[in-house]
Amino acid sequence: MPPRIPPLTESDVPEFAGVLSAIREDHGYVPNSFLTLARFPDFLKATGFLADALWYDERLPGPARSLVCFAVSWFSGAVYSSAHLASHAHDTGLPIEKLRAVEDWDTSPVYDPAERALLRLARQAARMPGEVTDAAMLDMRRHWSEDQIMIVVGLVAWHAFLNRWNALMATTLEPIPLARAREALGPMGWQPGIHAPEGEPT
Image (cartoon, rainbow, N blue to C red; front, side, top):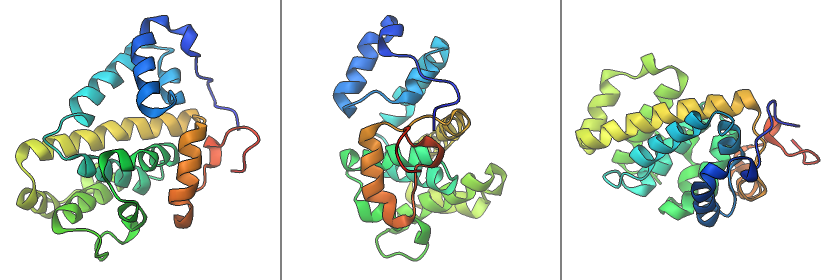
């Protein structure tokens, strides 16, 4: 289906040419979410600042960043973000089996105790932030430093924005993450739904 507000083209935002070119070189495409955010340049700038502050902070290992962002998106029913995170999980060293087992986070042997702490927090936060318990945060403290917990909570909050933005905008999935998500997440029942490109099955 068409997006509710169409994205701009890269040529519409020459002031972001360098940033968008770097994203294309890194990912192989420019996400439509960024091109929709670019209708209000300050939105896109703010998103970029958050990405720099949170996604690229190496105090939290790459696989952990990917896992918590995927989990909070998956548990929130955020189809677009789940696809993107699954598409690039291999770039951060997160194995596919750790995506596919997320529904069984508390019992699956693919996770270690530190990952279970991340997933417990993500599961509770995805439903309602107020549901995050003191016990969940205590478990986080057993495995992660205060700085790392700050980054995790920041990633959860950042993805809460991205997840809602893309769901409300019905942002169209790009071919690369669409194909990768069908392969990686299809066995879990993932479908693009409102994010399917025109002519693609939902």
